[in-house]
Length: 315
Ligand code: NAD
Image 1 (cartoon, rainbow, N blue to C red):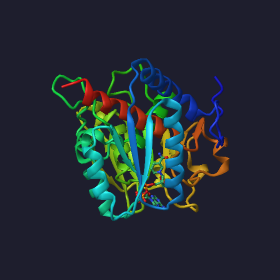
Image 2: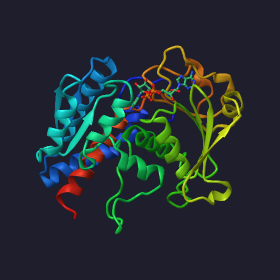
Image 3: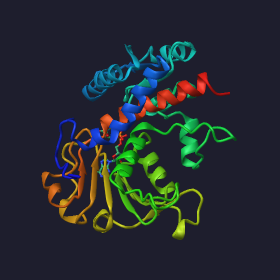
Image 4: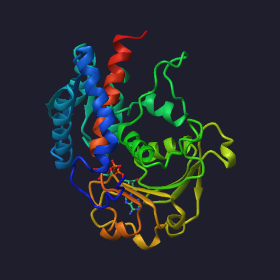
């Protein structure tokens, strides 16, 4: 298999993003067709952010291809809360998402919790986030309903599974044992949940933000059931050389990870709208993934189908 995906920016049928999402998309398409169902997703756009508009267009196109009914509702940010409440109560809607940022502050976190958990395809409401941080993987005692995981962190997990960073020989839940992963971003939407997910799966994760570096881990021999977090005095220059994976999400065009500090053969993943790796990343990385947005949409749709089934077919 040709693993030379370096610097391939366009979404085409040989890009790594496409290879990762393909089985999910095909399964979803086949399920929707064979069961004759019509899951409906509503996206709320209350900003003019070009990245959000692009994301909304991309969601619409993908939904059309897979058989999901997608409706984009544009509104004023002051009307958004009422519109979400209305959509929560509308039985014809199975999933709701919001294109962030809306207010760009803590009010966005409030809006995440206005979305009903039964329709939260992004997995950002308190219930799902809490379960994820506590490594609680099911919603019910009988373990029939898997928790909804935030979709961008989940997309990155799927990329890491695909490229073999997850060791499938190890038991489920421990498959990152021995891996060292650096994540440069600790936002509540992506970086912090991702650090927790990867540490819960057994990885040693360095979570870097503008202020400090924290280590997320389950202890030597994975003796802890869920991850714990501690501050570290290590500097980024010290952790990059022994990181097997570096994931970046710094939202500024000027930020670049110094290629010379990276391990030879590193797996490098960028989810920022800006390129956080220099072009010479191809000289060091065994795998370079410049964006994960398409995989994120596949995970959104997967979460939508799950919520549809939880609502319609299970107690
Ligand atoms: P945010 O502003 O909430 O968080 C940015 C994070 O980067 C913070 O933790 C901050 O401390 C850290 N940071 C900033 N400068 C830094 C520096 N110099 N060194 C180390 N850390 C630094 O942003 P966000 O919502 O997490 O989004 C980040 C980027 O990811 C944006 O470009 C956004 O468009 C993109 N994004 C992509 C997807 C996707 O592809 N699916 C999803 C969500 C966000």
